[in-house]
Length: 335
Ligand SMILES: NC(=O)c1ccc[n+]([C@@H]2O[C@H](COP(=O)([O-])OP(=O)(O)OC[C@H]3O[C@@H](n4cnc5c(N)ncnc54)[C@H](OP(=O)(O)O)[C@@H]3O)[C@@H](O)[C@H]2O)c1
Image 1 (cartoon, rainbow, N blue to C red):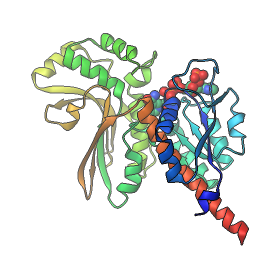
Image 2 (cartoon, rainbow, N blue to C red; image 1 turned 30 degrees about the vertical axis):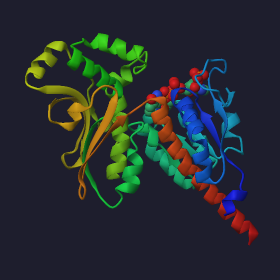
Image 3 (cartoon, helix red, strand yellow; image 1 turned 90 degrees about the horizontal axis):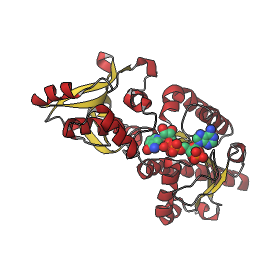
Image 4 (spheres, rainbow, N blue to C red; image 1 turned 45 degrees about the horizontal axis):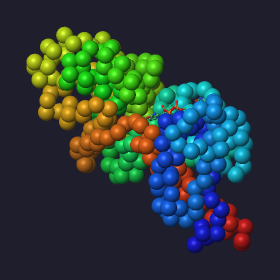
């Protein structure tokens, strides 16, 4: 095999927070599997952070505060953006793609706003843009749609796309807590940010809905196309009233292209509905396809290890591409 003669595949991280560190933990746990599968080691070259002195939960690769140490390093084959936010992440990803580097990202906000443009840029530069970690964390849904369901057709989907709001709603429903107590607990447990606006407004779920919608239906939609409401308006009086009728509140993301329905909002689900049984920080997706009918997934929608695992899957796929390209170059040079 040509691959055994090749050098390792090198990765640069933009960000070394919850997901970045979860990724390194995952790589450490899977090191020998990864090398065996690729036929060569995967090396994390360095990571971009804001503060190199911050305490981390895991031994860091070399840290830098200069993005050019990653974006302009010719030895780095794959750039992994796990810093979050729109800027400067957007500019960094564009720069990496323009240089023909493979890019992996878990940044749902960025993809919801700029996904089609970045995918086109990747195509023009004959490289790859991978983003499994951006939708439902540890549930491998994008690859399933792109590969597993490529002979089928998704007709509609519905799901719980945000673990923080599901945690809050579960506590309000099951334990009778009010909204602010449940939110405080979510923050103390590390499920909600100090500023929880993106979760509780429904924006986080809407970003994932937009990304998944484009994958399922191959249609261009934007965040503005989503009819969105959050969970802040809910109170115990409403919950108690609905509970007596056996109805459970869930923040549901729903896409039914036949009815032009693209929504994120609270639905009161009957006890028997499979989504009503998804409790705490779990995410879930119910998908109806033309051939297979109803399909259902549930699992961790966030967290360092689960999301890091999804990012690692993307790194593996892009590393395969890097190695195939090297093999091709090697063969051409030998002609
Ligand atoms: N957390 C999850 O469970 C989860 C799940 C799915 C998707 N995601 C997505 O994954 C991405 C990362 O999330 P996270 O939770 O890992 O975030 P995080 O814990 O806040 O980590 C962000 C990292 O990026 C670095 N960073 C941020 N802005 C920077 C800048 N301007 N220059 C240099 N470094 C910068 C930070 O540096 P310092 O460490 O020095 O502060 C930190 O290492 C986001 O797009 C998020 O939406 C997260």
